[in-house]
Length: 377
Image (cartoon, rainbow, N blue to C red; front, top):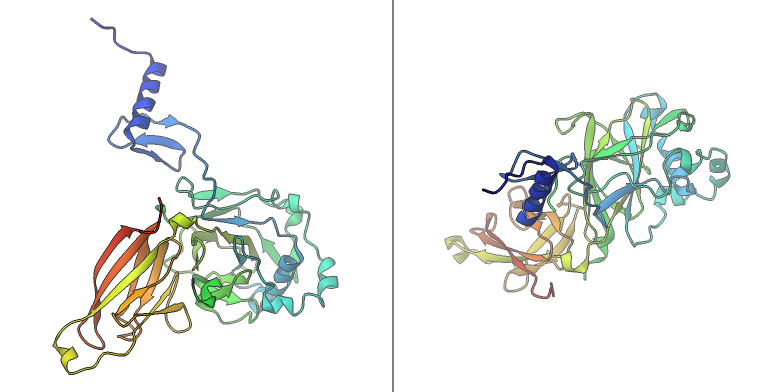
């Protein structure tokens, strides 16, 4: 009779081998491996490191004149000057695209250069190790901790104390030739305030590459664990979605550069739309000469998003876009009811079929995905 294997180390090796061969291994935030419907035993391993995250947050440029100038401008907000309000400053950067100097800062950059040099922030190493990133969208990572600034680096600028969040986290686990406006980045949060106005603001805003914005933290049902959601979307780069810690009242939170990575060419996808005019109403009503599609990664409608036109066969092609969620609007129909959120899967074509029963009523009747015919992979 064969001897029973009872050594715990040998058993662990056998279990881990079975898990790896089964193809049902998942990476959990606790850095543990667990198999579906498998043994309760968990085996500690070293998590895989993603070579190129979809987005990251970096403070490597924190000492640059443009960042110091942005902080000078942001701390002039009236609410911060009276010790009220909760704001976080960040900059949006598209990887591989040289950002232009933001308009409200470029106009005064030379004039204020001497003044800014007198209030230089502490050495970079006392704030964050150079080139260290503080957030990624790797599915195995839900929150990334960063080195807290030294006590002496908690500077006061224009009477406003700076606050450095130590973590940025995702709100939920995530699965893995365009017009000139495609260099625009869309941002949505509790309230987005421009440095140019330092007043007003709204939940949506479109930015140019390299623009700074203030996130005004307004308590809502979207807040989780004293963190507010921020979503950044682009027509050329991956999107980013994360939760930003609410700074202490009257302090200015300093997040850093939110850098959106370029997708690999083979991961780009697109949306193809097929519009059909159905029903008796069209017998007495002539269709429009052309119909339009508006789309955006975070918001669409009015000044937001880009426009594509349907051809004479009532078909439309968005062109290649990064994978992710997009908001669509068929603005020639009912402006409120003709909106949808659809997904472009990596390397695939999202095919949508719409049926319009009248000049005001249109419905999405089919949504399918197929591999891009021109994709070699």
